[in-house]
Length: 323
Image (cartoon, rainbow, N blue to C red; front, side, top):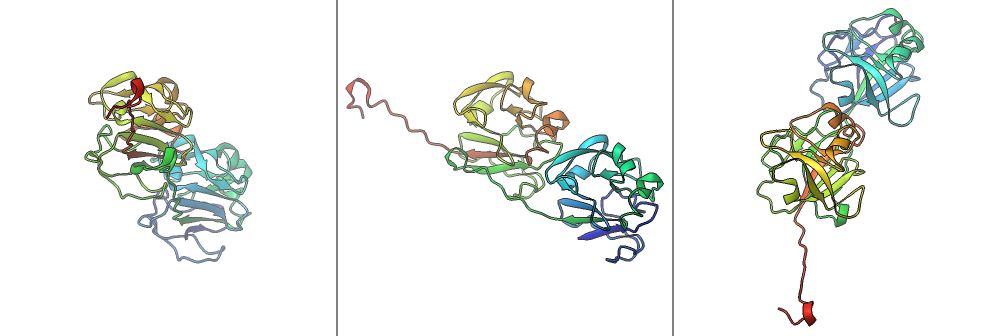
């Protein structure tokens, strides 16, 4: 859906709303030469932006979460663009106190300004930010769409898993502060990995195993409930199996008293995982590299539970005959 337009002129969009969708001006028109216009889209469900020149020769697609936030010359994820058909990052600007931002570009902002690859700017900003692209490519447009991506890791290790908590791709971990007890309830349950964070109550559910997995199911681990629970700080906890190993091993995790972002559950020791994309659970909307090194790269993360009955018998000992 086309929501914002600027023609081939020497200045960017008049909007100052930081792409929140609250700016409304002009008369909507499909004509590239039409005067600048914008419609409200702040209450429209969507998860992707398309920024494109009027002639459609320069464009990029980015998730809503990649565009939003407060950042300055930071790498932000682009799903694909007129330059690349796969995900990559480019340095953008989006400072809340700067009315002409965000600056959205196909390449890093510094080079894009000179090469004409800036695709969004606001507050009627001019200079070469606009002159190198808008007059040459019939202006620029902003489009939005809601593209669900349904994915489940419930078949891992024979299946039987129920998803109970979800955080989408982004720069912050689960909002929950219940330390995985299962009392946190928020959001709306969905199979869409792009859905906003949600959690259902599971403190009274009958289960004995956790599965922590990224949204794309590429990184995961299974641990017994008792291994996750308890109090420990950099303590060794048992992992039954994971995307790294198919047998039991230990990793150092954290679940400290009154530390609401805990537990920190990771594929390897926390110390070597937090900034290398190895964390699979964190709470209290914690950010930093704990989140940014994995959530934007692997479609967020989910928590699953199941009750796995393990039958074991010693009836064969000493010749058998035991009942």
